[in-house]
Image (cartoon, rainbow, N blue to C red):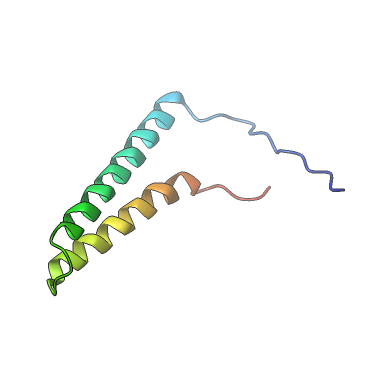
Length: 75
């Protein structure tokens, strides 16, 4: 059996910084979903713009999940 303990933070970030991060990540997520919808609305066509829009949406959603993880590491 392992002896796992959670390392507590010594100093919590200010509430305003956390709120801004949540709002930015939520906006990136919703914007990414919108781009995915716009990119896939034209259907299976050979349009390069739709493919780039769809891919950009996937990247934005990934960024929305990745930004909160920056700075997180095993202590």
